[in-house]
Every structure is written in C-alpha cells, then in structure tokens.
Figure (spheres, rainbow, N blue to C red):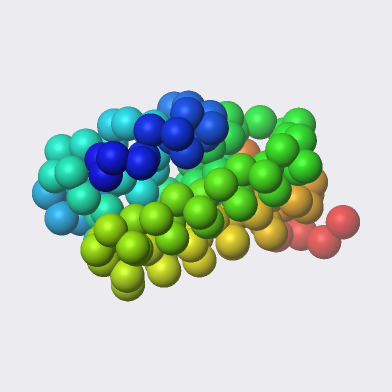
Length: 133
C-alpha cells in the first residue's frame, strides 16, 4: 500500500470479505482490510470489481441488522479521504470513482432498516418477498 495507508486503514473496521473480487488479477475473495485494495496485485481493482463488493463490505461493517449509522457516517468520511489519497498517488481514477459510488449507495441503502433487512436476506440466499405489506 502507499506509505500513508496505515493510519486510515487502522480506522477502518475489519470484516469478513466473502464476495469482493479483483477483475485485474482474479483474486477471489480479495484479502486485506480494505475492500478497494487488492493484496495480490497491489493496486486498486478495476471499476468492474466494485459491483462484487457488498454494501456491508463497502462500509467495513459486519452483516447485521443493528448498525450505528453515526459511526458509519464517520467511516464513510474516512473512506472518502482514503480514496482522495489514492487518487493523488496515481491510482486509477475511474476505479476509485466506482468505489466512491459503491460506498455512497451502501450508505443510503443501509440507513433504511427495511432495506438493510432485505440485504441481509439476500446475503443468506433468501430473496425478499415482492408482495406488498
């Protein structure tokens, strides 16, 4: 990782990464604390890899219903700073923009408890019911 990566990485919570993969080198699942950094090829995975990251992974959260959204908002700001740092170090801007977008989508989806529950069901292989309440 670039030299300044250590401080922001320490602020990010480690979580199990079951789905994130790197379309550059094929690492599946990607290992490491940062979902947007491939330890195998030592680069930000291409933009196409962003879709393989779950919303929980994107924000460094364990998949669960009870989420502290105040802490998650702070984590989002930390991620945004990290993405800016990587952009300044010359990493792929298109890929970083895809990860920024994925984090924003994750935050907006996870702040709604019903949507969070649906996402948890999807992670466990159960599709939410399409029937109206």
